[in-house]
Length: 278
Image 1 (spheres, rainbow, N blue to C red):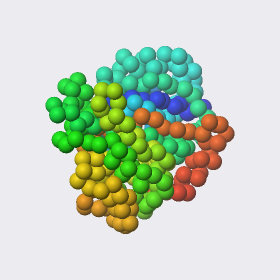
Image 2 (image 1 turned 30 degrees about the horizontal axis):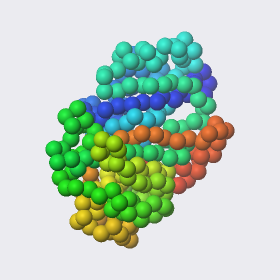
Image 3 (image 1 turned 60 degrees about the horizontal axis):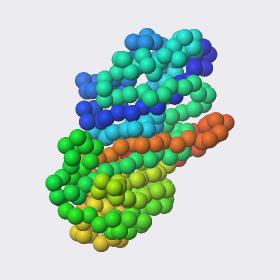
Image 4 (image 1 turned 180 degrees about the vertical axis):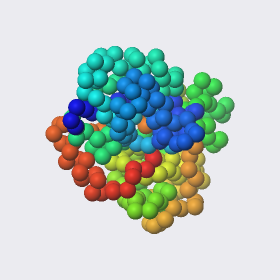
């Protein structure tokens, strides 16, 4: 890029008061708030190509979101050492840029990603959610059994057509490879589902969680969620879990920067339609 440089931003946010990541007229979004702060530092015409790894839905949080932006090289050189601190003084308290670094021109936060990893938090405590954590944990009204949750999860790992768990969009594939799906109960009793895949289609993560929860509380057999994979359209039997329990915790990229372009090209061939929210 003549006279410009690509910068990777590592971003965290509390999604409670955002209408998702993507900029929308008249709505408060993470992209909108971040772009406004960057415009104040570099000028509105200087900031181009703000691209994110995963466009999270309204109410979904992130601790490991990644995006890239293209900036004038001279302006970046002048402000690189102070950008994170400058942004901390301009951004609202529910969004932080944790790191900013120059990357090769062929780094693409969206297409060069090798995986996205989410966590979903649930409590089955009789009293519900601790007040200070109510924005990040779902209260479930029935006891949940860890072994049943993991039995349900096992049948969903691998490459499948997840049409039953997605909101289909025209020209978008619903075939995905889930490389990790498991549950753990932490010391404080909170149940955490970890879901990792090459990418996710719209509502997929929360739909998977919704299907597993009714297995965990005994209302469905362990093989029911996997059985829905036979469907070629969204299943009306699946309830989408609420957004606030979900957090994007990590995005992976090739260890060798020389592989960015190849990964991006391969991903574009697989998914030519715009990336959909998890």
